[in-house]
Amino acid sequence: MTRQPNKHFPRSVARLGLIAALAAGGSDALAQSSVSLYGEIDASAVWLNDAGGGRQFQLASGLIDGSFWGLQGSEDLGGGNHAIFRLERGFSITTGADQNDHPYYVGLANDRYGALTLGHQYDSIHDYLAPFTLTGGNGGTAFAHPFDNDNANNSWLARNSVKYSSSSFDGLSFGGMYAFSNAAGQFAKNRAYSMGANYSNGDFNAGAAWLHANGRGSTESGAYDAVTLPGTNRNTFDASVQTQNTFGVGASQALGPFTLAASWTRSIYSGLTDTETGLPARSIAFDNYEINGTWQACATLSLSGMYTYTKGTDAHWHQGAVQADYALSKRTDTYIEAIYQHASAGAPAVINSMMPSSTSNQLLFAAGIRHHF
Image (cartoon, rainbow, N blue to C red):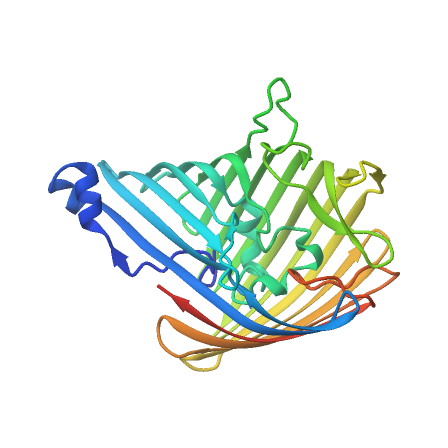
């Protein structure tokens, strides 16, 4: 996925070669196969000016990346071919609850032609477009566009998915995904497919992606769960969606220690049904315009900021955010951030992963610590 280090890409520090060798049944496998154990723990103290009508102080898990652990492995099959796998599991550092918000897959890769994988995976929005948003980079979870309507923060991963990711050809990479419905006799019910591409030339990067889903949230075994959308009186509701189309473009330019990026995404949800009441709801569309920048002030300190304007069918949202991240070591960093969101026309102001505000405004301050292993 990326222009700056992907927040979800494993930082491998431990090679479990012995396990790989035993699993393969011989010492030859030690040189040809590897398994890496990695993960991240992220916890923060959060102050929210309005959460359902009152101020809220809370200890939050994963305000930037989400806490998780994972295993990633590769077996050399010869001729530039590899068998690969990745297993990750998210969890709440505050409650210990499991969270099914990370990928797991198995597949084959070729050094020249790319990789084909099967499992529970990120879509092309995550891989080729999200890197140009701050939520898809070092900003993280709370920096998402309202309701994460374009999935730039990968709030949902595709179940039952087959995915191809190419190698880089003179700076150009591309890929696509198809997620099966798994419904007997209903091939298109709760299925999804996506495609995207990225071009990199020195300090310049650009990308584009498209995601299409049919009947999302209409079955429990299909590609995607229901999606949270704005309702009336500053409320939200979970909706199954007959047709979803999300697409967009983004670009970034590095200027020494400063990186400037911009993106535009559009998400269209039609044929909505409230999953709780079963009643139909109006279709809704979102256009998200974002500009963001990151300054690597020194080896240990980075400063980031963004502004997003989101135009919905009947309302709009303004969101601004800043973040400072200080590295205590190569594996541990601390951060502080502030996010403000304003909504119009009675729409809910709701910073991603927080409770909706009872007014048109919501303000968040947070301080946290992360450790990578």
